[in-house]
Length: 392
Image (cartoon, rainbow, N blue to C red; front, side):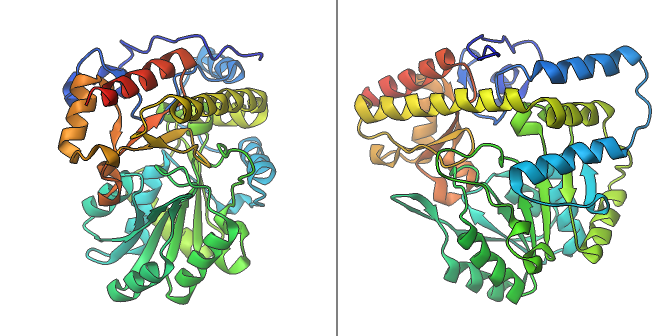
């Protein structure tokens, strides 16, 4: 490889959430941290060079998008997601979560209903509740092949609660599901039938493994494109979350106007200049780095699955995700309630993981672990997990 992903990078003392806030969040300072979904790899040197050149200019005034930025984004989404977009469809936001909040305010009123599929990325539910909307959950079903959708329940909940908006996690976090086109089409047709707008969070789209593929929701049909907002960002793909940049695409003019109005109401007028610089550099010069980091993470995932299949405690169940760099461990065979399980992992194993229940009640007995780190660090974590479970 041209890039060294085995090289550990000390993130302590940089005010990073992943490592520097253990004590504040109830974990021992010497915990091994695998919870939040950013990478422990330095971003692409090509991005760093672009940022350095922009910093050396020395002026960071008000900035906005020009044609060269849009062209970089347009070519990326076309090549990687087979999605053809126009300049007028692009609305920049500081991040996908902020875009979700803007969409909730744009397309629903207080006490109206927004549906999600739990277990799902917990800012979905947090943002809905903090916006004083009615949170409606349609439970995914855990089976031999991971999470599956209960379409009857999904439609029933929409009808019963007069749902206005659906927040879709595509690919799915935390379950690592790469939605198949026919699955998304079925969900989309239910939404179309009942007048539900769809916000598709596609932030993990660049991480899909094996024979699986990512389907951009808007590419399924013109009808579904017309009821959807597509949320993209380089933040997961290139480890740029702290630079606060995401690209939202809305073809439907009425939806776009409503979303823009909600964004303007938030007071967000101009994007982060360094975020724009990093995004453009990532999409024009970072593809080789992304290809190599994906190969490295894929090997991390393969080694982890091999470890638990061959010599791990049999009560620890884990499958390779179809998408994302997040491992989803099923520890229900231990017979521990969530409080007991979390205490064992935090205090005995000294592992800082995301408890499955954070993503919804369906996640009880599961934990999420981030595999986007040097193998030497990940290996410590999986060994510590196995050794601790064996001692119970």
